[in-house]
Image (cartoon, rainbow over all chains, first blue to last red; front, side):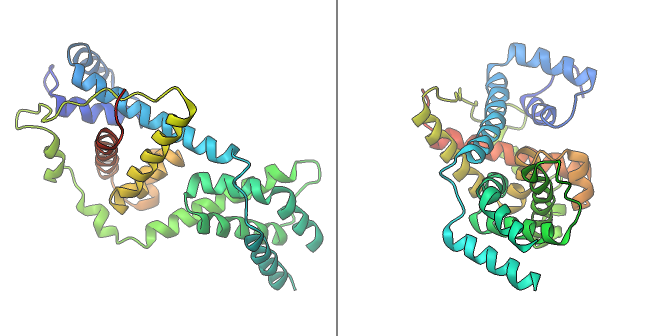
Length: 86
Length: 185
């Protein structure tokens, strides 16, 4: 890989940066590319927003007390417990 | 013993269900996971009265969720995953021959107000559902379950390159789907 990244290469490195720490050389090249390329900077921001939104979605569901097991579901589970227990 | 299991379901069932639903994103699977957790709780006698029952049950549930995820993955032909290698051309759909964006990414902002946020998250959720199954499974493993890449590779017996290509594709697809379906500003 040359000193200057193409947008395609930059987008791949941005995705990898969400999963693993980048090598020093990739980090420098990416930093430079993002400095001069608005499109990739927006792409970088898009991926980070998606990642945060997914985390948010998870917490929202976890904390939404209106989400409950239905009475039917509880009965089904209780029946399964009883039939497995005896 | 059986009585306390029923108490556990009453006291913690809804919490466990929400925890499972947030990760499995499917009401039936979430119910299954709670049921499996209760069954495992009966059989186990590792519960110490001094730790909270909820913490203990959540620990069991986490394992059950991973089991369900594994099962889901096993039901998909592994060849589908292995077919996705870096030489596949569909990544190039987004770039021209010299590596420039064909369509430049647009500004994407998470809205401030609660109602719009809800809409945004619901569109994102639809976009995840629209991903090809093999991409979605690994994406969910990584970004919802927060399993690290190394463990994803071990779990699925795929290479690190396979894993990153799949995650890259999934993310490219998601951001495109959001750009199309979420009106900006």
